[in-house]
Image 1 (cartoon, rainbow, N blue to C red):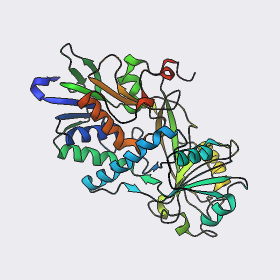
Image 2: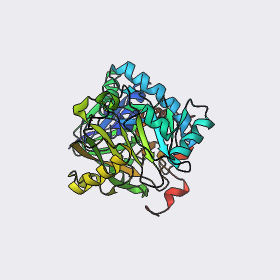
Image 3: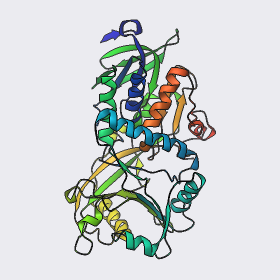
Length: 396
């Protein structure tokens, strides 16, 4: 094994895990003129973790918490900057609708966030939802919050874009190297050992995704890695033509009415052959990053189809494909972003709990702030690694 010390390599910062958040951090650090090294086990845009499947929802009327909205506004700015700097098509604002009964968090929480932050929105009743979006048939007492500024981003393209732009700005990228350990060094720096070499730097950013139990084992974070499945079905277009299922006419969506189990999904984003994508939210089982079962069973497909036709009665065509990925979920379902409690030269970002991808640009910015200044003005206090909710056992 070769050894590269901080003085040899002259790295200001190492980023462990150049996926969604790590790629954004590496890009931001490089843009600020720092000499960054990114270490990734696979390659940007890979399908082995949590940032694949072709699409992720972006929205601002955030039922998960009004506190997220300022970060989302900042993230939207970052998405456009990344598109411009990379030349890649990343963000499509096709609109989004959150549907539920009046008391459901899906609807009521979205409405509260929209009102608290003055976000443009419409409230539609069930008849109005059916009229505007004929693919949908929600319960008669359902309500929908429609947000024109919602849509989707492309995760694989995003991770590739961040890595490409970071390298263009001078970052070094090592792919196909698995991190075996890291440590804070006595002089206030860090050392990272992979299966190929040992690297040194002044600062470290750890963005391990579903590998958090391995890479940040010292913190004992109560994060559960969950297996999740996406499904792509072909709609029956006899009653509702294929154009009505496409992102030119159809929004992204989230729905839970009277406790029927939250589902979310996307319009046709890659033509009819790409399929109409949807999934249960937090309907998976515990797993580990290296043991993810990627085989989707007939029973799983049948359960998804039963739920799908409750909202989309014409989503009766064949399953085109299905894919498994992973959520890394904290007990309070908020992220973990901040300085390592024991090592101020180390910043961490993990536990994105199935709703973090839309924040990629702003998390990258926050991590770069922590590296450069040891603090950030971005409102990330909710994600404090030392908060009380992270002191409880996972699942408690």
